[in-house]
Image 1 (cartoon, rainbow, N blue to C red):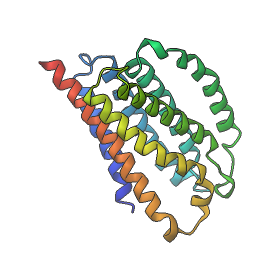
Image 2 (image 1 turned 180 degrees about the vertical axis):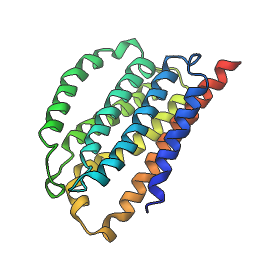
Image 3 (image 1 turned 135 degrees about the vertical axis):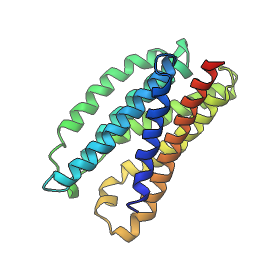
Length: 213
């Protein structure tokens, strides 16, 4: 299990490497994905370190922080690059949601693991799933140009964050339940998270490759 948890940071590091090769030549979407990889890698390192030095061995707050990072990244990705101008109104709705997320995160920073919940992450996951469904609707109904890269990213986003939404709803149970019972769920989440990172890294590589031609 421990070796499996190393896969995600390795993929993140690969994404940072890919993005840094042509950082000055990357278009805006490439810069955005590159920034997401850097934020994800920093969170991985910090959460692992905090889990070791914290007296309670509690780094669950980083689930909430990663939720905010996901929310910001996918809000910009979908509204700026997938939806087009007709859905920019969603950007204005994201500001009060962001304030709510920080408020919820602040008030649970000191919670012990047995009392921890991830309802703020439920909001993040739910909104991202909504983005993915909305993008799928636009593609199916011909409202957006059918692009392989968008369809690929959208499918993986929908798959991972649908599962993560279930995970977020049951975080308290999963944290406090017996290890043997929940380990397969954790493994599935790690696999899908790695798939998401790999898909974004491949997309970033494709962007850099196309810029060279």
